[in-house]
Image (cartoon, rainbow, N blue to C red; front, side):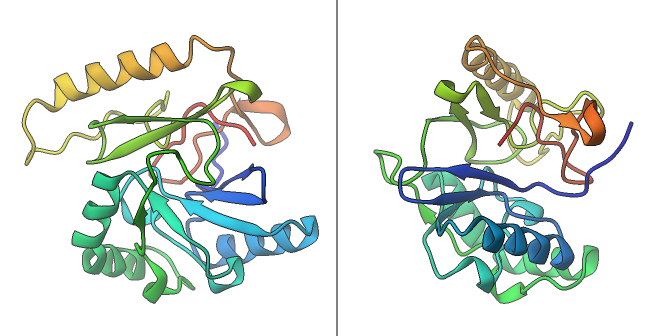
Length: 203
């Protein structure tokens, strides 16, 4: 199995790019910014699938644009922001710590984020997958790894039930034809994000 150390997905919206879970360390953030520069398409928003530190990152090179999560996810990110900063500092290098976790609740109409938001309570509070049905893509945000075991939160009740419900919802979303993102060189599915996996995804 070949690992790709990144969570990042770029999604083309009507007005520009939406960066979903952009990056895992400073080098990754800079490489993503270089890619954005080469494309010449503006970043109009960010989206965090869930409030774990490695999904809350940002870089000034992406621009001062809104960064969204579900309302529950944005609230949780605010509550854990200091802890996320400490974990990022301990786990990676070159991350702008002051930009971690500055999220706003996603508008009810989805704002600039295209597709359907599939919210559930497994893996992290306020978790959301993004279904881009017209593109055959499901961004599952660590939920569908074929390598790692589910992450249960002992502080919250019935996490097994939460996973069962979430997988049912994601299964329904995946009843649309979706592409599973391959690893580098067309290898096995990409378990992006180092200690976390993005599951079904594509850009």
